[in-house]
Length: 85
Image (cartoon, rainbow, N blue to C red):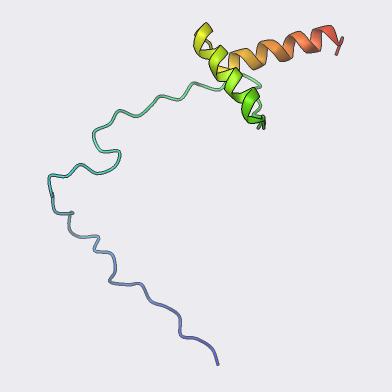
């Protein structure tokens, strides 16, 4: 026996505005972070690190005022240079 399709009509009232409760809603009034523009030819990569290596990376980044991205990019470029890759 086939089920009747569920009708969700009437659940949303698109003709009125929400009542202002005075309580700020999530994200309301907060400036949005500007995303850095993608560099030409940029590709994304996901990297998994063990907890201790990640902690050391975070500490080093904070101490040297660098981003994780900058540190890893420099390290990888140096590795590839040494490996003649």
